[in-house]
Length: 220
Image (cartoon, rainbow, N blue to C red; front, side):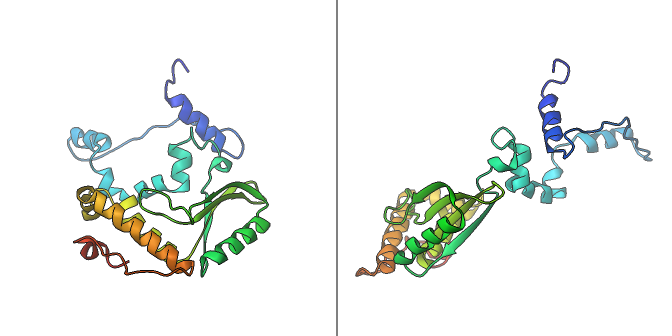
């Protein structure tokens, strides 16, 4: 470790990922033969500005399960430590059907690790509603299960793309920053509106969208 420094952790991770529990290191070198100024080759090997667009597809791996295991090994040293390696979303017709679906999930996956109910009391700050469960399958891997109604699903997708995780630098991100209070107020009002619809309660007039939101995100 005295000589390897930070490289030791990377090598240990490679060994853990190997089915044999070891890796073979062979001697070798990278050799170029190019009819050009040698400085061009060196710059191409060392520059940090071209990967983002020349090799853009590889950056998508960072948000995948492989990316989490590789880039966040301290949080996820092995696949069985991940809570969203696989998952499923169950969309049912009404609030009453949510409880039936939850019981069915429990019977299918006896190992319930976590159960959070955001249906009767929405999750702040955007009024998200769903039942979230973490269950273990027969292989010991943890799955995330979401159970909600079609209205709650529509609200969740709309809220996610507009306010929860808008693309960085997007018009949605700028809009939410500028109209934070109005966005939260509307999303919470729509969440309550859908909850009353799904539970068979009387509903009043549909909440009005803040100015400019429909042009940006469509209708909810």
